Image (cartoon, rainbow, N blue to C red):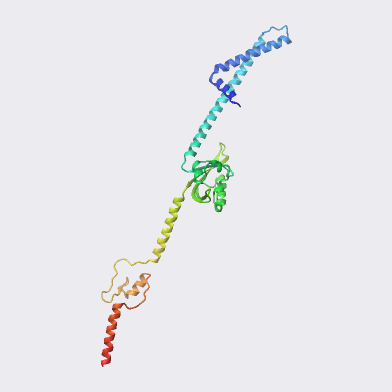
Length: 289
């Protein structure tokens, strides 16, 4: 339907007088046309008779209601088209302004529309590099089968919520993303496509990995450390330690039981000198006897 015809319809909508004028003009034309035809076929019939007028008026009324109905239908159609345009503009505004990546696909996963954020996240410059490709091409190979399975389950209504994937960039590197997919349905509930919202969580993922590594190191360190706490009763003379059962234990035995420490015995320099002097004196006394 060309623009000139739509302009005429708009003119009819804007002025009901034009609608009436067209109907009256049509009635007059049919009156005269019917009269002219009868003047040739029935010369004895008057040029303008009641029959001619009735036919003309009936035709005019019929044309009037046809045009009025056409006017109503086009008015409804224009209203629907306006609402669709506004919805389309609103959707496009959401897609363009969203801080997350938004991708609209067909039921088979073919990308139909993609937001600027999703394009930049994948390392591309414009939508022409992405539109028409499968969304599964942007997932690392080892996770594609899982993604396809989840997409099928979503179409069946068996899965909802977000999942984490590793997505591939243009240069071959990858990043972690939290992806939430939903099925797009028409007014009858029939699936027509899918919408995916993706968020880059690479930084969060690295923080979580660092935290898990730190916790692992701490747990390992704690498993290797067994400390003594509280007041430990020790003999000021022989240095034995009393345990919870009241038994006095040699220092080495007590520490071995309550820590992971192991002992190897030797003599320090001070004790060596002390005992060496005592041993020398003892030998001298023994020799003198």
